[in-house]
Length: 121
Image (cartoon, rainbow, N blue to C red):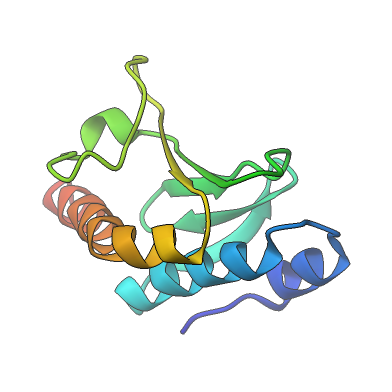
């Protein structure tokens, strides 16, 4: 898993009521492909592969909110992504059971992003 010490410290310093859930989603994304990296952008952990994939929306306190910056480009066959804007989509996770239930869909979306980015190079 390709963790970034800057993100580790950011999350350690953050007093978020859903930190265990955030760490679980983080782990799923980073384990989806060894080439995914992470950084702090826009004051939030952001996942990167040939461009920004998604960032946590750290202001949400009752669920984990993950914004896919170009989510409209990703196939949403599992229905995980919400929104109908021009570009962004959001995935929300309410608790550990919800994360477990949505893990396969999240991994699929990450792999779809990787295929999409690889097809452009």
